[in-house]
Amino acid sequence: MTDGRERLSIGFSGPTRPRAVDRGADNTRGRLFAEILTAGPLSRTQLSQRSGLSQSTVTKVVNPMIDAGFVTETGEQSGGGIGRPQRLLEVAADRRAAIGVKIGPGAVTGVLTDLRAQVLDQRARPLTAGHDPSAALSAAAAVVWDLLAGHPDAREKLIGVGVGLGGHVSAEEGRVVRSGVLGWTGVEVSAPLAAATGLPTVAANDVDALAVAERWFGAGREVDGFALVTVGPGVGCGLFLGGELVVGSAGLAGELGHIPMAADGPECTCGNRGCLETLASDDAVLRRIAADGGDLATIELAVKAARNGDTRALAAFAAMGSALGRALATLCNLVNPGRIVLAGERAGAFDLFGDACTAAWRAHAFSTAATGCELIVDETDDSLWARGAACLVIRDAVGSDQPSFDR
Image (cartoon, rainbow, N blue to C red; front, side, top):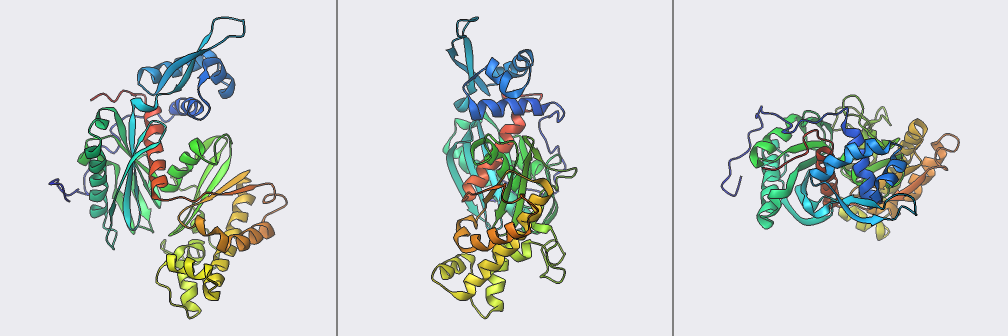
């Protein structure tokens, strides 16, 4: 690793979570913080009405968040002639900062954000082929140091680092159980990064992280249930149902990319054959073009060729869209979301696969599962993925039983 710092040891066996988080109690704190974040400034009475919690509970939960520097009181709201004016609550954006890191197949991208996850700075480091865990985590640590070097005052108010990665990530352990897109199995993430940076570090599936960002700031705002589906190098899905992120018993909820679609289909990175990811990812498009006699080396060239009328490329994107549409129908039939947000690196090519996707979705969905669901296309880049990772550590810090991070 550069900067004169030691290369990370993947075998680090220290604590994966430098802070103790009570998973049974953090939902209320996180829920109220999200209400203040997305709808504030709010009075305690308004917060009570929106959350369905009593005012005494709201006060009990909010006051420690004020003491910790997450929330601030600002201005007053008239009581309408009844009672005293009430102080308004809003997120104290400038009093704390967070770092979000996205580890992808080709690069590590990091952002420094305020408490509203507004990006203050962005840095990136390329990754060479092979996705070596040690090199990737060293690059992630270097990105953190790059951000802090550019903002030396940020460390004093930094609440920690959030890391988003593709695949099965155990958020409780801070460990990648298995990632096909990275080729990792059983790789510790939180612990070595925390050791290298001296900062509290949390790790989770990158699509789940992006779903939190969409819930707080994007197309999932003000709705209790939506599905985030990402398309690009892989196919992912994050689910918000009843206002809560659904992760499943082992963190595997939403693995839409690995639902079986074709028994004799191409081999997937997970080891099975015919998964959706083998039919609707970037590699699937390039493979289809090659099978038809085309020769396009990158997905960017495929997009350009399709927009220039190349019939092979157009057919490949149509096949991708059809497979994705059948998967969306399965998703709607299972959980009946009122909204699907389509994001990821290839969302910007919806003009090439959208018609086939929508047709297959509506054809295979049961009853009104598709017609009653709104589809929103949200183009994303690595900075938004990293911003989602910053949301992870903000949410984790707010939910902590030990919300003070003074060092």
